[in-house]
Amino acid sequence: QVQLAEFGGGLVQAGGSLRVSCAAASERTFDERSVGWFRQAFGKEREFVAAISWGGSRTLYSDSVKGRFTIGRDRAQNTVYLQMNSLKTEDTAVYYCAIDRPFLLSDTESSYEIWGQGTQVTVSS
Image (cartoon, rainbow, N blue to C red):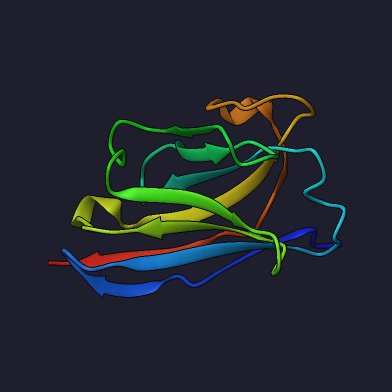
């Protein structure tokens, strides 16, 4: 059973913006859990992008996206989004959302228990 699904990926020109979102199969999937975004470019290892705590008051960002990307929760839609602005060609990757272990807000891949299938983001020059 697919518990997480990402959507909103696509093709955008450098300097543009895109929002990817992560939806949960159940209203309870996100309960009291931090949610993170990771990405994997072709031929590279998966890397941390951003994470948000259950309450939304705490966030983490990688240095490479800080100031350009914003992670947030849309509680009405029960989604977690990643707003990506000032996109660069090096942001091209498959973007994954994941749910952290209870009571944690981590930037470490091994901390995350549930993963989505990923959505492709391609930034053209």
